[in-house]
Length: 286
Ligand SMILES: [Fe+2]
Ligand SMILES: [Fe+2]
Image 1 (tube, helix red, strand yellow):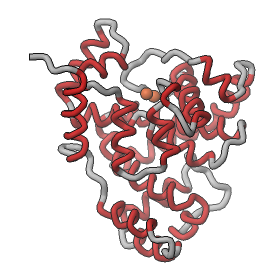
Image 2 (cartoon, rainbow, N blue to C red):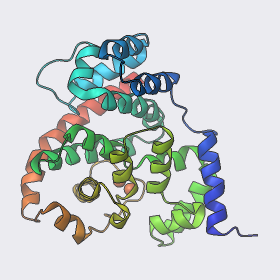
Image 3 (cartoon, rainbow, N blue to C red):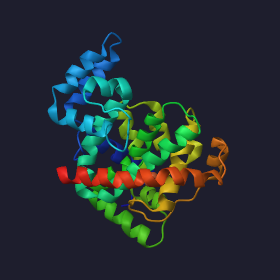
């Protein structure tokens, strides 16, 4: 018997809530959340907690010094990283690094696509003077989180989606048919469970359907545009290899014209080149 869409949604959400078979978050994230909730917590206390975990500490420092964040000064301690990047980004780094450990092994191309979108998002955010470009970049890094979850934790369903796409169905419709949700909704759903900032959640949720954005329309339009540009440039692969359609509304929202894209690409090229090395290096560690 075929289940209707709302039944499918319920089942998938239940599974997501229990995180069955999903990449689990390191326990440090829970403790970090608790510390951050308390307004009296100092940066030192947060740094102390993180430093207890050697693996995570080295990942944070490596990311902070990588081409991805590329600060002019070397960041050598967790305290420095907290000061430069902020607590939210550190939390997100911890979450992403644990998710992406799985992804390197499963799908390096999707990782490349994600860092590509993040880099492009940061360039756009800086150019358009949008607040906290690093945080917007992180939304780029996580925008296809739902695809990872589909691939790793819903293997059978994922195969069916691939078949539907091969038969010519649009990836988003295929996902909705199988799960009742698409990857943008799945990613956002998990990010909510993990208590990530609303700004990031909304940008991820709306990156294919801008009308879903309410409070963070610009950020959503920006991730939408960055995703289209990276597909068009061809960097990594996001499992469905067609360039997604560009919504004109995104350009309007950002007050951005197509002529300016050339300028963005000029800035993007050397960054993508550096990122290749970064990805290679990370791959060696696994
Ligand atoms: Fe996507
Ligand atoms: Fe994407």
